Image 1: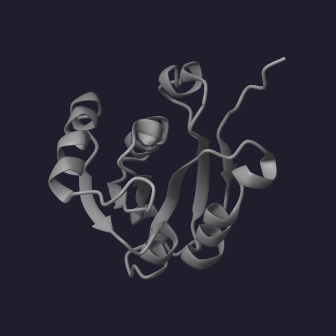
Image 2 (image 1 turned 180 degrees about the vertical axis):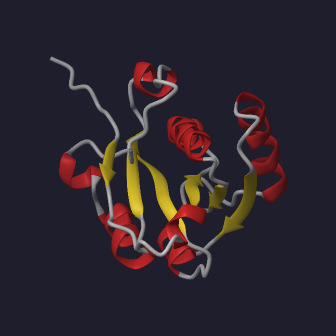
Length: 161
């Protein structure tokens, strides 16, 4: 029997001073196409909130460097599908945890793809690092997520509602 993988959300309580109302949604994007479901879910969440999306090109030993121009071109397709979302593109070699932890501007939600096969791997070191160091909610998206989940998102529902 095949197991079905779905996104897992770790929701953090935010302050009530309004800081998080202006916060961006960040999505970690690698060179591989494995992060497409994560980008789709991040765009959907940003669209629902009227939030800015921060597409963070993350370099890794496996996928190599993510070039700014290439990432910007990849995001053009998403800008077309979600015209109301203001997309900003940045690249980093620091990893998503260090990048988010070092930002002054608040991030309400970080969307991260993972290839973890078990719950322990799914909510593993990257998500744990983001939760503890970047102080934001995290949506962990398995790279093998069912396309019906990512592609058939209800246009009005949010993981953080």
